[in-house]
Length: 152
Image 1 (cartoon, rainbow, N blue to C red):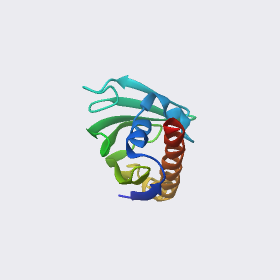
Image 2: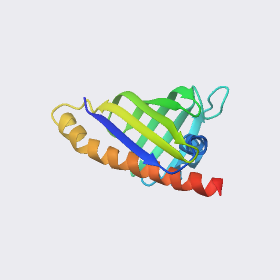
Image 3: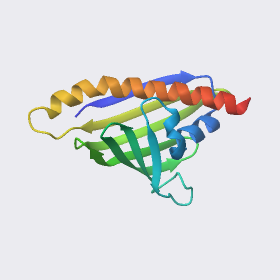
Image 4: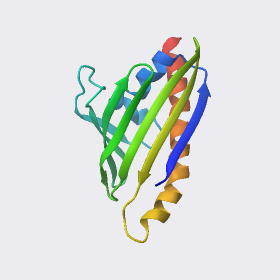
């Protein structure tokens, strides 16, 4: 089961960065996301624990992700509960933010998954993992730029 592990240190305040990363309905600001809709609100925070977001990645690719841990501004976890067109078995998605200073944050993003399709699933997952890593890095960097703009 592949695990993608990305660490990035960015010049952005942790609180603002967390808010941007968990603003599900505006996730289309991130490269590769065509749209993202909240199909179930979290409680008590709309984007928090229990929220389910539907992420359209382009073409037929759609993921439904449930927020299973929400600890602002330190971390959140999610799991893919539905994927199209290929099935995905997702055991962990965790984004952790560590403040290194008032405007500097270390972001660690870990995601473990498999594509349970006979014959091609393992090969597809091994090719997908580096793409996910690039997407996570790009998302973190974009969120950092947006957080700096919001703080200015």
